[in-house]
Amino acid sequence: METAARTAPAAVIVGIDGPSGTGKSSTSKAVAAKLGLRYLDTGAQYRAITWWMLSNGIDVNDAQAVADAAGKPEIVSGTDPSAPAITVDGADASGPIRTQQVTAAVSAVSAVPEVRTRMTELQRAIAAEAPHGIVVEGRDIGTTVLPDADVKIFLTASAEARAARRNGELKGKEAADLAATQAALVKRDAADSGRKTSPLAKADDAIEVDTTELTLDQVIECVVTLIEEKRSA
Ligand SMILES: Nc1ncnc2c1ncn2[C@@H]1O[C@H](COP(=O)(O)OP(=O)(O)OP(=O)(O)O)[C@@H](O)[C@H]1O
Ligand SMILES: Nc1ccn([C@@H]2O[C@H](COP(=O)(O)O)[C@@H](O)[C@H]2O)c(=O)n1
Image (cartoon, rainbow, N blue to C red):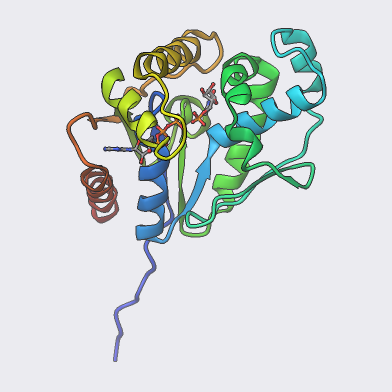
């Protein structure tokens, strides 16, 4: 008797891009966990190399010095969506990469072509090793890192909504000025969109999701549905 062959779903590669505070990390982690996929935070990698530059006395505004040092740190990213991890030369960097000092310096470092070449190679290698697929979030995943991704999403939200979300994270800590938060994220987006190499941009074939009026759960549901539709097509 013939039995129908049961095939596991093919690995699915998902790229989620967008400006700062649009919900890329929260959405990507939840979607990956729900669908049994790996997860990669490429922003954390750019933050990690920036932290290394700062820790090693390299002037982040000296593009040549950053380029010369770009190959030195060893950056290792975990891909478990329930326990994102990142190390630099074997040391846990998950805390230090989130400081204001790193946030203020990361756009300058990530604009250096040698840094982007190194990170892109690392990101492609990680994506290629994910057995069932991966959700990769960043700024240039759909345009440059994984142009053949199965699903490309570009998240957006108003600057007001993004600033309010960021300030909401500070509960219990000193409340930040909303206008200052908004100005800082708009400035970082402008630097990321304006650089020559792999700027923050929506790929032509990416699906744009404006999250301004959506809850996080609604965004997650929307992205899961888009991936499932693609898988069943
Ligand atoms: N749709 C939403 N509604 C309300 N809050 C949200 C929504 N999406 C994300 N958030 C909250 O907004 C904050 C920023 O989200 P998140 O860190 O996922 O954004 P991001 O795009 O990855 O930001 P960055 O690029 O700066 O790392 C978090 O506190 C998150 O819980
Ligand atoms: N694919 C990417 C991802 C990130 N960057 C740069 O890193 C910064 C930090 O990113 P977060 O997601 O952690 O906020 C971001 O502002 C970019 O400068 C990048 O260039 N490409």
